[in-house]
Amino acid sequence: MTKYIIQGGKPLYGELEVSGAKNAAVAIIPAALLVDGTCRIENIPRISDVTMLLGILKQMGARVGVVNKNTVDIDCSRVSGTRATFDDMRRIRASYYLLGALLGRYGSASVAMPGGCNFGGIRPIDQHIKGFTAMGASVSVKNGIVTAETAGRAAGAVVYIDVVSVGATINIMLSAALAEGRTVIENAAKEPHIVDLANFLNSMGADIKGAGTNVIKINGVQRLSGGSYSIIPDQIEAGTYMVAAAGAGGSVAVKNVIPKHLVSISGKLREMGVDVYEGEDAVVVTREAPLRRTNIKTQPYPGFPTDMQPQISTILCLARGTSVVTEGVWDNRFRYAGELVKMGGVIQVSGRTAIIEGVPALTGAPLRSCDLRAGAAMVIAGLCAGGVTEIEGVEYIERGYEDIVGKLRGLGADIRSVYAPDKRSLPIRA
Image (tube, rainbow, N blue to C red; front, side, top):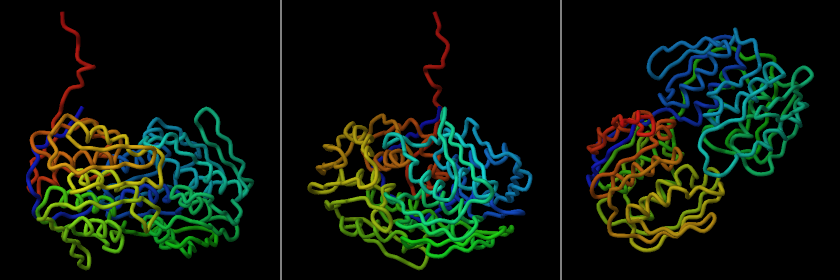
């Protein structure tokens, strides 16, 4: 078992490079199943979710070659089966994108129900199933396995997504790229990684228009050919370091970003009294004055991202005044609040709303990460707090952040990763 130990209270100074977008990578890797030939994917983040997905493709018969630490070649020409029920499937939510990719390529898919972070109960896939069914698939869920089959190629259809869903939008895009005829996705999600997936597929020969708007039109093509593609920078990783700099104080240049993707985050930080300067491919975050209160409501893109809610809520614990945070996407994303209370935070949670009373300081404490973004929030809390913070459950954090310890140490943070044997596994001595 690994844990992070942080000696907090030190401002952050310097610059760092943001890695490729996790949420784009975990959609583009399954999309390689649709391609005839080799895909070279560049700017791929070195995170555990990516490692697991590449491993799943290997188990299915794909050839995966590592070109360098952030570039891989994927050739799925030897994939013959359409069943993906490996143990790793249950550890990563994005494994459900294999449903759309396998259905689109082979007309059949049998995939284990996904796992990943659990902060909103069981994540429904009803909108995914609605899309597959509209395209002519018969879908069943039995013993934790989702099976979808079509008679021949999937058929183009008009699909209205009842509740904006990134996952459903991506899965329908994947199943439609090689479908017969035109597919129209209405009320589609607009996140940057959806645009990135569309750009990847188009670069391989797909015909997708409207990604980034609420109506996406996909004309199915006969085949996709191999090529090279570079993944966009990670919006949420960039936002996490921006918030860390705002909370701890100092001045940090966050490089290799697309500032347009960060507008809602930058805007809220400015409301809190933080200076945010936007360059062509970088943002500089500087905070010297005390933080001010603000209100947050998470929404689908281009609104404030739900994946940044735990991080900004953490520094609101140190802001002057009372802040109200409303979670507009998931039902139960405040499970981390109890960890912040251990550090002296004052938070009252009722349903999807948290009321946060700012306090002068947080104090280091033993913490446990309960999901990916909550884990990032625990790191930020440790950086801001006085004393020592120890964080367990860091495997969640490493699902989505490449070398978070090294990057923070490069900014002057006193953080280290240590091996701590799980006491539950130690032998009992008389």
